[in-house]
Amino acid sequence: MYQQYKTEASMTKHNILFIVLDTHKVSSEVAYIEDQRGAQPIHLGEILNNKATFKKLARQLQSKYPDATLHFVYEAGPCGYWIYR
Image (cartoon, rainbow, N blue to C red; front, top):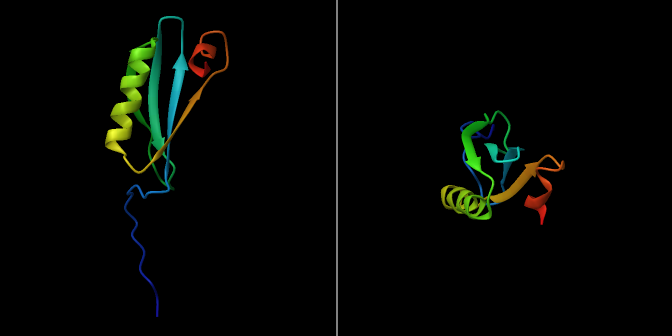
């Protein structure tokens, strides 16, 4: 007997959501992708580089994917270091 598996993408409670930031001096380009086979990246656009905007982004993504762990990925250059702090 063969077991059937769902092929559609759906977040499970142990999934990771990678948020990718291309940081610049004034703004950052944002995209994200689910940690699943066949997932497609989604480009969110440009946001300003300030603490309030990043908090809002995190809240929106956590609301959309409540069971996912958010992992922020950014370049560790002079424009991205403040995000780590």
